[in-house]
Image (tube, rainbow, N blue to C red; front, side, top):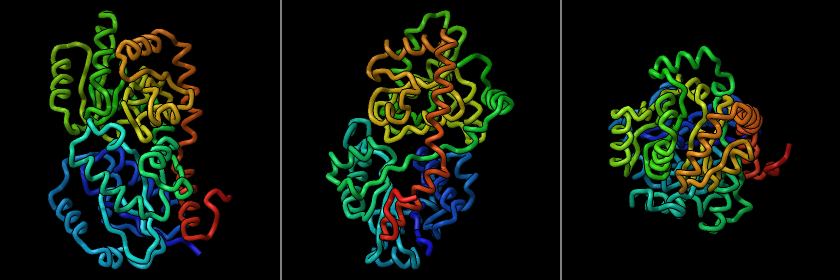
Amino acid sequence: MKTRLCIDCSPLLVRSAGVKTWLANWVEALRLDGRAEIHTLLEPAGRELILQSTPASNAGRLFLLQAFRALPAIAVGLASGKTDVFHASNLIRKVPPRRLATATLHDLTAWRVPQFHKREQVRADMDFARCILARADGVIAVSENSKRDAVEILRLNPEKIHVIYPGVAEEFFLVTQDETRTALAAVGIRRPYFLLNATIEPRKNIGAALDAWNLLPPSVRSEVNLIVAGMVGWNCRGLLERIQSMDREGTGVRYVGFVSARHLPGLTRGAIAMLYPSFYEGFGLPVAQAMACGCPVITSNSSSLPEVTAGAALLVDPHSPGEIAAAMQNVLTSEELRGKLRADGKSRANQYRWKRAADESVRFFAAVVGRVPPNSA
């Protein structure tokens, strides 16, 4: 008998980046797997539209989300239908009564680096932990690092947490040179470039990347670009102004904004290296995407990033612009190093396939309802 799942898709209604990408692809992968019966709640139409752009949240969708959040738990149960498991997002605080409930834990930034978030974001994450995670019958963590944090900080039972790595879209594994040329033409890039693809917000540590860029020799900065891509986030006014100012002043830094899913694989593949000096990540999808398409990676030696890259990247102290700059210079000047990072990255990225994530997810849900052990074949 198939496990019947109801997946709360409310993050697809709002302005976001990583969680939205993860959720849209995860639901599709579960449907393609076919071994569970998938129902969704608050899923907007058009997966491609969801992934191609990340516009400001639609007022109608926000009203729908707020109305749903105001419903009593019994109404949530009626809306979710006759299913075995209700999988909650981090945007809701009620699950159906007398129903098995699960959730996905992406990170614990609200506890580890609260200084990089608005107070209401921290409060919302803590409410999610109290109302959903603490009561869940099973939790998916996107990395061993997130699981360790959940056990240490939230005191969750480790036996109910199952690590399932997110997948990387097949487009990154299959991207071609022609697609790279198309992406570069669309974005208007003509020089060799490092790529920093991240939401413009303090946790991503873009300021240190800009400091590192300024430490590179003028000869490098006159021939190479640092391309900063990503949607505008929060607490970032000064940072965004700095990026845009460096762009205007011809320093070699260019801000290209949010890059659609159509062009992101090609843009990533064409980079000298992905630069990702984030202070804290639950997983770090841009790093996995870069490895999948054979782009060398320079990233932080903290949180989940050493786990995700597993020796296939150059790790740096995110607090040290000098160390970041040295890594950039090493990758730029050593063809041998670039070749090794490409090969090692592509090998590691095979761990991040959506087919694998779906398979492990189906077995996780079957274990929650008591049908099979979580790691059975």
